[in-house]
Amino acid sequence: MAIPAERRPAHLARLMKLFHGAPIARSMGTRLEYDAEHRAVFTQPYNPGFDHALGEIHGGAIATLIDNAGWFTVAGEYETWVATVEFQVRLLGRAKETLVARGRIVNAGKRLATTTMEIHAGDRLIAIGSGTFTVTSAPLPPL
Amino acid sequence: MAIPAERRPAHLARLMKLFHGAPIARSMGTRLEYDAEHRAVFTQPYNPGFDHALGEIHGGAIATLIDNAGWFTVAGEYETWVATVEFQVRLLGRAKETLVARGRIVNAGKRLATTTMEIHAGDRLIAIGSGTFTVTSAPLPPL
Amino acid sequence: MAIPAERRPAHLARLMKLFHGAPIARSMGTRLEYDAEHRAVFTQPYNPGFDHALGEIHGGAIATLIDNAGWFTVAGEYETWVATVEFQVRLLGRAKETLVARGRIVNAGKRLATTTMEIHAGDRLIAIGSGTFTVTSAPLPPL
Amino acid sequence: MAIPAERRPAHLARLMKLFHGAPIARSMGTRLEYDAEHRAVFTQPYNPGFDHALGEIHGGAIATLIDNAGWFTVAGEYETWVATVEFQVRLLGRAKETLVARGRIVNAGKRLATTTMEIHAGDRLIAIGSGTFTVTSAPLPPL
Image (cartoon, rainbow over all chains, first blue to last red):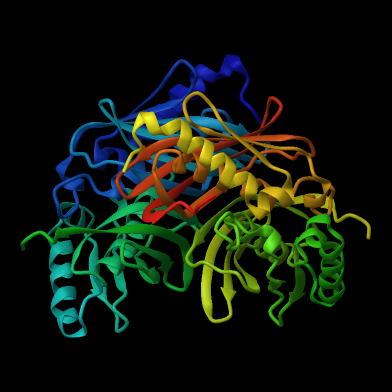
């Protein structure tokens, strides 16, 4: 069920708190905000611990941002838990610097939602993605 | 260029050494072996530091294994550096236990290679993936 | 809801009849059978009317077979209508001959199903695919 | 090699002629134009011969437009033949009316190009897609 407008700010605040408490967010040092259109915006400071063997950011760290950007953008639209069904990542450039990942809702249905995602390093487009998410009836975890 | 059979064992040994020295492999505690058909097999012991907010393995950690399984299976076929073009991840089950990821070559051309990947937790299929990789003329990094 | 075993043969017969009556099946001359594991197997005789400008089978005709192979394999598992959410096609070879497309269930859940698909021209693997399908509560159309 | 600006108009005219002569374009009645940014824009009048069993446009016909929109947008950037490596289609709505498909270049490299695609029925977004294309050294076919 789409979230009523008056409950949106508290809902997004709750999602940010949820994310910042998640183990993977702490391990990678990732930060989440929502923009004025309720899109998730992740900032990933460069962390050399997630480099591949050539000393640049590993595609898996980029995929983690793509998944997060889609999931948290979708989660902002529903009051119940959502789950990632599938996502695709297209790697366009190499980076070893701060990354910013953004999600965008393409379709938010009753049971399924579709997003596209983009990752930039400054002005450079580093990756794009897209994904499908399913809306469950499970409540969000208590904070 | 496909690798000559007599150079394959040394090549795979070099790739394993390369992987185990990569920062992300150390941060996540991932191990790589090659099976008898030269397919990359990754073992990822459960590491709660890569859980999402509900206390299960984050899709990004699964995507990292999918990317690795494809990349290192492709890299085993060529003597030069390969690069991930795109990959897709389909999440089929939740897990908080050791994961094993395997890659399989579908097509290994002169300039492009395609793989499928699978991740199991014991007998359970947790995720499948597929991806495209491009073969560059750059040498592998020195060890 | 998964289909009871005793109703499966009539269900698959109905799906074959449904497909062979569909306008696109008639326009393209495609035939559907089910194998012993209830997987959809499509045979597409070479039809030069679906060639691209270089005189080989267009990727869209291949994608149509990929979609069909997934959809009808999933439809064989449920008594209600299913809908394609997304699918991906990886083109591996060129062809201008009869194609055979097969679907395989990777996961058949209550609300969502995942398949992989393969297309061969004789022994040659021409394309692989994968897709997500959603299970609706709508009945199949009357024949 | 990216096409010089002065040769672009003739190149796009040639691609339009190539497409309109292709068997699949004739069979489906599809039309191609290029917009001011050299993006391929396909118009597909509703053709009930490509409906599925429920009497709406088959996902394969939509996938054909997605493939075309990406391929011809990429082909507009290079003087040699390009080939589709893979593409993904996300179906968002049902339609039985004229469809308009557009491609957009995300990345146009020396050997590989990435696009996104969109299909509308009037104002409704019916499908999105994305794909990878490889740039070959083969010349375009003579007209």
